[in-house]
Image 1 (cartoon, helix red, strand yellow):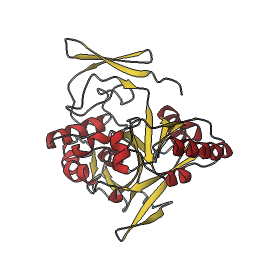
Image 2 (cartoon, one colour):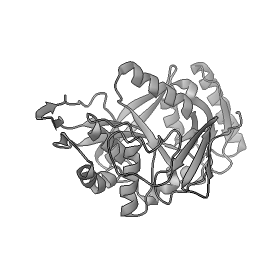
Image 3 (tube, one colour):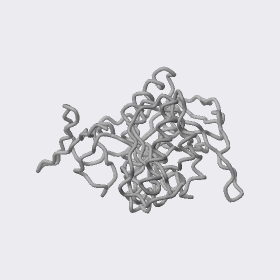
Length: 329
């Protein structure tokens, strides 16, 4: 595979300014975080500078955006399709962290919405949102990810291709029904609120989608205990209730969003696991990393995979993990 080059670097000055250079573009950014407000133009979008959480490490060089999905060999066969790659987005309350999404939603949202400066626009109520999430990791061939999830294979995806695909889908449908972003891991309650403010100010909010934006941001805030996962998420939101707004003296009732295309993954501890399918372009898949057995087992599995991948029309590298604890298949 081609060697990946950095896409962005940060240059710090002795003043209050930080320069971000990315592919020939330079952005001058003044430190300090504005209060949450609609259509805030003072904070650069995440595509130019990122790391809005306090204490999360300014000054790092962000490499070309490749994402890794650690999973089993059986799951891999379900992901690889002839015309696309298909990931299962699990509903938030079946994730490995029982406080996922709830953590930020219950701590931040009520206080945050109250703090937003509104004129003629008021939020009457917030309905229950149910995120469906596909998890990726920004760490290549990561020992902890292999070990925690007992994974046998990691899929390497080029995020640039995926992002362009999603942007085209949103442009064609005129509706943003899919979201994505890096997870943040604030260590204190104060940092939780600050992360939320920064995510909100970096989002594309309007008066008509403010509730979606707030709930979208909550999905990206996780407890600090999960920081080593370095997670990147693709997700969608389902809603339980209709939403009502009060704007300039008139009630506006939005149509209810129905739970379309929900499927059942199976049963775990007596609970039904729900998911939704996320289809990504097959050319975004750039490689597989195998974490299985000894060299002989690896070579045999690689040979069988190459036959199967060729039948489906995939062409990319397969390599052996250098860091994972070996798992026999």
